[in-house]
Length: 148
Image (tube, rainbow, N blue to C red; front, side, top):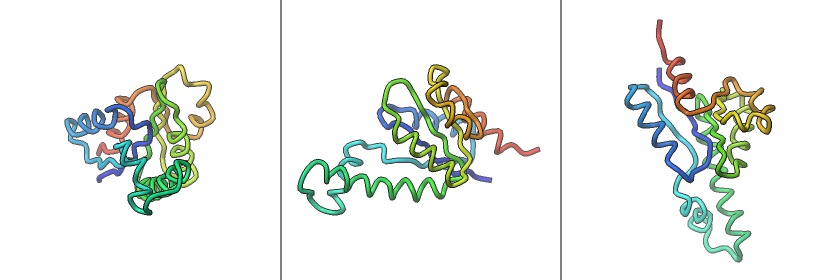
């Protein structure tokens, strides 16, 4: 069995690549998908597809449409959603993606440090699993793939 896992969370550091490399070392049959990790491309995609926009707000709106399309398709095709919350960045997209996973009935692994327990308690209560780091999340994914 293979799993498709949507990796929701900030795109400002290398956490996705680190997780993917660990999964490869463990020979886990997991295909990872997620948001566009190239921040400049994510911000420019609306104009790339729809043409120049009249102002910065409309540029953001056009990019948001295309990025939401990508998220809806890839998250919808995933078997599991892993949503990472950390201390360093605003986590609005992570929260939106986690809520979408819950709404769609997708299994959700919530990754958050203990310090974010209180602000994420309701979301954590809706997730199938809440862990404190991506290594624990990878162990949970590995357990799904174990055969007797």
